[in-house]
Length: 151
Image (cartoon, rainbow, N blue to C red; front, side, top):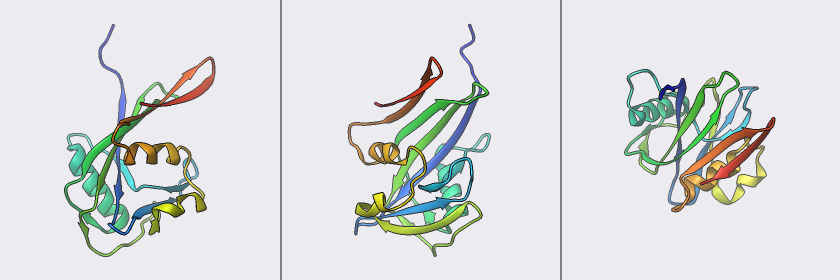
Protein backbone atom coordinates (compact mmCIF):
# COMPACT_ATOMS: atom_id res chain seq x y z
CA UNK A 1 0.00 0.00 0.00
CA UNK A 2 1.39 3.35 -1.05
CA UNK A 3 1.95 6.07 1.50
CA UNK A 4 1.60 8.78 -1.11
CA UNK A 5 -1.45 10.30 -2.71
CA UNK A 6 -2.30 13.16 -5.03
CA UNK A 7 -2.76 16.38 -3.09
CA UNK A 8 -3.90 19.88 -4.01
CA UNK A 9 -2.48 22.49 -1.63
CA UNK A 10 -4.08 25.88 -1.12
CA UNK A 11 -3.88 28.62 1.49
CA UNK A 12 -6.19 31.37 2.67
CA UNK A 13 -5.81 34.15 5.20
CA UNK A 14 -8.01 36.02 7.62
CA UNK A 15 -6.60 39.55 7.61
CA UNK A 16 -8.07 41.47 10.52
CA UNK A 17 -7.94 44.84 12.25
CA UNK A 18 -8.21 45.69 15.94
CA UNK A 19 -11.62 47.31 15.36
CA UNK A 20 -13.19 43.85 14.81
CA UNK A 21 -12.98 44.25 11.02
CA UNK A 22 -12.09 41.33 8.78
CA UNK A 23 -11.12 41.40 5.12
CA UNK A 24 -13.38 39.30 2.91
CA UNK A 25 -13.68 38.50 -0.74
CA UNK A 26 -16.95 38.08 -2.62
CA UNK A 27 -15.84 35.32 -4.97
CA UNK A 28 -16.95 35.28 -8.59
CA UNK A 29 -16.18 31.58 -9.19
CA UNK A 30 -19.48 29.83 -9.99
CA UNK A 31 -18.15 26.60 -8.41
CA UNK A 32 -17.66 28.29 -5.02
CA UNK A 33 -19.31 31.74 -4.93
CA UNK A 34 -19.94 33.97 -1.93
CA UNK A 35 -18.07 35.78 0.79
CA UNK A 36 -14.97 34.09 2.19
CA UNK A 37 -11.33 34.90 2.89
CA UNK A 38 -8.91 35.47 0.00
CA UNK A 39 -6.35 32.85 -0.94
CA UNK A 40 -5.32 30.38 -3.60
CA UNK A 41 -3.07 27.56 -4.73
CA UNK A 42 0.40 26.82 -3.45
CA UNK A 43 2.87 26.56 -6.33
CA UNK A 44 5.19 23.58 -6.62
CA UNK A 45 8.30 24.22 -4.49
CA UNK A 46 6.76 27.27 -2.77
CA UNK A 47 6.61 27.52 1.01
CA UNK A 48 3.14 27.74 2.49
CA UNK A 49 3.83 31.10 4.14
CA UNK A 50 5.16 32.60 0.93
CA UNK A 51 2.20 31.21 -0.99
CA UNK A 52 -0.34 32.90 1.26
CA UNK A 53 1.62 36.18 1.21
CA UNK A 54 1.71 36.06 -2.61
CA UNK A 55 -1.96 35.10 -2.95
CA UNK A 56 -3.16 37.84 -0.61
CA UNK A 57 -1.14 40.41 -2.52
CA UNK A 58 -2.48 39.19 -5.89
CA UNK A 59 -6.10 39.17 -4.74
CA UNK A 60 -6.21 42.20 -2.43
CA UNK A 61 -3.25 44.48 -3.19
CA UNK A 62 -2.15 44.19 0.45
CA UNK A 63 1.27 43.04 1.58
CA UNK A 64 0.80 40.91 4.68
CA UNK A 65 3.47 40.06 7.21
CA UNK A 66 3.90 37.24 9.72
CA UNK A 67 0.93 35.07 8.72
CA UNK A 68 0.32 32.50 11.46
CA UNK A 69 -0.90 29.01 10.59
CA UNK A 70 -4.13 28.51 12.57
CA UNK A 71 -5.85 25.49 11.04
CA UNK A 72 -6.70 23.41 7.99
CA UNK A 73 -9.64 22.25 5.93
CA UNK A 74 -9.52 19.07 3.87
CA UNK A 75 -11.65 16.83 1.70
CA UNK A 76 -11.32 14.33 -1.15
CA UNK A 77 -12.10 15.60 -4.64
CA UNK A 78 -14.17 13.69 -7.19
CA UNK A 79 -10.82 12.67 -8.75
CA UNK A 80 -9.75 11.18 -5.39
CA UNK A 81 -7.24 13.94 -4.65
CA UNK A 82 -6.83 15.24 -1.12
CA UNK A 83 -7.67 18.97 -1.23
CA UNK A 84 -5.98 20.80 1.65
CA UNK A 85 -6.59 24.44 2.59
CA UNK A 86 -4.10 25.87 5.06
CA UNK A 87 -5.64 28.58 7.25
CA UNK A 88 -3.51 31.58 8.18
CA UNK A 89 -4.31 34.82 9.96
CA UNK A 90 -2.55 38.13 10.49
CA UNK A 91 -3.22 41.69 11.53
CA UNK A 92 0.02 42.97 10.01
CA UNK A 93 -0.38 44.44 6.54
CA UNK A 94 0.23 47.51 4.41
CA UNK A 95 -0.85 48.77 1.01
CA UNK A 96 -3.98 49.91 -0.74
CA UNK A 97 -6.91 47.53 -1.01
CA UNK A 98 -7.84 46.57 -4.57
CA UNK A 99 -10.07 43.82 -5.93
CA UNK A 100 -8.99 41.25 -8.53
CA UNK A 101 -10.53 38.94 -11.11
CA UNK A 102 -11.22 36.53 -8.23
CA UNK A 103 -13.78 38.91 -6.70
CA UNK A 104 -14.39 42.13 -4.80
CA UNK A 105 -12.51 42.55 -1.52
CA UNK A 106 -13.74 44.73 1.32
CA UNK A 107 -13.74 45.12 5.09
CA UNK A 108 -16.71 44.05 7.17
CA UNK A 109 -17.35 44.06 10.88
CA UNK A 110 -17.03 40.53 12.24
CA UNK A 111 -20.47 40.83 13.88
CA UNK A 112 -22.08 41.41 10.45
CA UNK A 113 -20.84 38.23 8.72
CA UNK A 114 -24.31 36.65 8.77
CA UNK A 115 -25.67 39.61 6.75
CA UNK A 116 -23.77 38.40 3.65
CA UNK A 117 -24.21 35.54 1.20
CA UNK A 118 -21.39 33.29 2.39
CA UNK A 119 -19.38 30.73 0.46
CA UNK A 120 -20.35 27.17 1.34
CA UNK A 121 -18.70 26.13 4.61
CA UNK A 122 -17.46 29.61 5.50
CA UNK A 123 -19.22 29.68 8.88
CA UNK A 124 -17.50 26.45 9.94
CA UNK A 125 -14.15 27.69 8.57
CA UNK A 126 -14.51 30.89 10.59
CA UNK A 127 -14.90 28.82 13.75
CA UNK A 128 -11.49 27.22 13.10
CA UNK A 129 -9.87 30.57 12.27
CA UNK A 130 -11.07 32.08 15.54
CA UNK A 131 -10.72 29.12 17.89
CA UNK A 132 -7.95 28.32 20.33
CA UNK A 133 -9.10 24.70 20.52
CA UNK A 134 -10.20 23.78 16.96
CA UNK A 135 -7.63 23.12 14.26
CA UNK A 136 -9.40 21.30 11.45
CA UNK A 137 -12.51 21.27 9.31
CA UNK A 138 -12.71 17.79 7.80
CA UNK A 139 -15.20 16.72 5.13
CA UNK A 140 -15.69 13.02 4.46
CA UNK A 141 -18.08 10.88 2.48
CA UNK A 142 -19.87 7.72 3.50
CA UNK A 143 -22.59 5.90 1.58
CA UNK A 144 -22.91 8.73 -0.96
CA UNK A 145 -23.46 11.27 1.84
CA UNK A 146 -21.10 14.09 2.88
CA UNK A 147 -20.37 14.89 6.51
CA UNK A 148 -18.18 17.45 8.21
CA UNK A 149 -16.31 17.45 11.47
CA UNK A 150 -14.75 20.28 13.42
CA UNK A 151 -11.71 18.84 15.16
